[in-house]
Image (cartoon, rainbow, N blue to C red; front, side, top):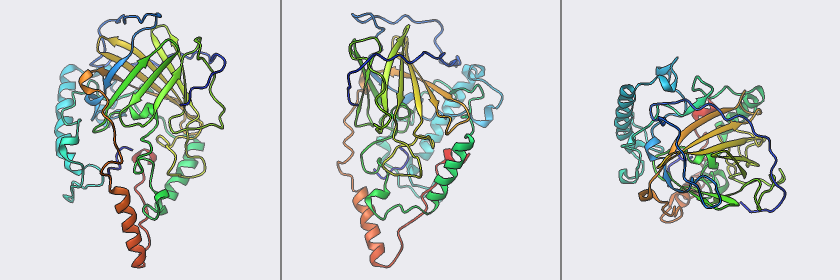
Length: 361
């Protein structure tokens, strides 16, 4: 539980009328389907995207295009190259496994979780990276407003207390929440199961590492509604959905995000502002796969929207297992006990948590 790497109310109302925007182009990578797949239909006519899913085989895949592939597109990577990439990533994952969290491979400090917890060591990656737009596979630079806010955040982090009181710890350490919904599906090292459930009026999405279920009303149906007031914010935002042909489009807003400075109770994603909007597209592309494409829109953070995509693989052997975060979790007690002991000795609380790499653009 000391790992620092991991980092909906149903309200009736009027039908959503958000105008449709063109779907981002998804590059046809090594694992792209050869032909358009026609999903089976549910009794009320919607495509069936329900099931138990996992993203464990996409673990070890970098979000952005690695520099070694500069000038290449996802579709330029040959199956032979992808096989070599996959093998190299698996070897690196095994070598780094003992040093996850706050360990240090260079110094030989191994304080990660037990190896048998980990699901990513033999991941069979389907693509070389996940960002599909911009075409260069890179997250756009920060906007001027975003850079100013990020500079303030990093300055705060340089002196922020990390162990003085419970409020200094993030919601993950406190077993409250684990990242915004669309980003939570990004593969990690364990807990990579998701579940989609469908009714005519709603789609529900569960994530193994999230304690909430996203309840998504569908436009044009009895439960349809616009987004709630922007004064109502939550860890996982407010989601509304609509069908565009065979694709479920889910738009989420109203995230709790950093506004004036880092607040541990909030869940920013790569420095995003409270204006973050995510647009997810779910489409069944094979009997056992749903392609999920997620666009991040936040002019107050990035110079343009950007999109990442990956398959969710249906696999009933990977059904969600209760994430009983508090059971046997001595991390918080020990962190705070260490701070109290420091105080008794006249030692100032530890400062300067590491600045996340994504804020070092």
